Image (cartoon, rainbow, N blue to C red; front, side):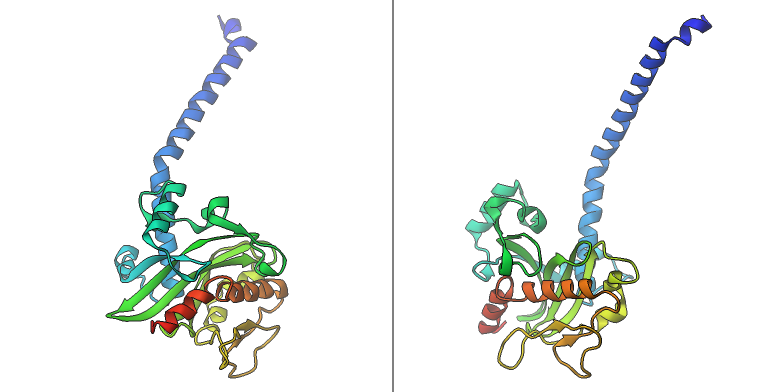
Amino acid sequence: MSANNDSIQKTLIVAVLLCLVCSVIVASAAVSLKPLQQANKTEDMKKNILAAAGLLDDSLSITEQFKQVTTRIVNLEEGRFANDAEIEEIKQLMGLTDISKFDQRKASQMPELSSKLAGSEDPASIKRRSKFASVYMVERGDSLEKLILPVHGYGLWSTLYGFIALKGDLETVEGLGFYSHGETPGLGGEVDNPLWKGKWVGKQLYNEQGQLAIEVVKGEAPQGSEHKVDGLSGATLTSRGVNNLVRYWVGEQAFGKLLHQMKSQGA
């Protein structure tokens, strides 16, 4: 009896059955936890949007705080908010029932919803850009108080994903933060340092002639500069990447047209 149980055939059968049981358990756990993972991902995104805008209050729930934020979809090519027909097209192409779940990163990989960038069109090294993007608005009465824009671009080792928040004048930086990147801890990873992020607050996107002027410089920015931000010490390529991605996304090839249009309409 003991010899039969030790046979190679029975050992293989037990191993296969064990693998099948484990596979079913892992697959079931992955499927059942997916809604929770998505909910956590959505809440984390909202938390980062609030943090970039200086609105995050750890004593309050993210859901409650995010009620002050309105999400809008932007047609980046034409610099305006998407119309109803465009929103329906996005929902159909992406299989969405709720446009608030629009995923710009996913859209950038879909030929119908994105454009390929090359050479001088791609200073942020993102390869493709979605034709549409989500923006986040905080309004008080009829006045725009803050506008938060998603930004991303390549640093030294990774693509950095984050948000830049502007004051209601659409020129003054309210805050900058990244929620995903793989830069070197202690060097490029200093993009997460609150002291460095604080250097962005109050900087102006444009000069007196209306030209894009915000810039990350190597070393220390001139004292009192309205447009220049200190580079990260020992992280030249990451600093250059942040400079390129910020200038790209607030420039004419991305949100620049929208910003100009909103200002002309007295936003």
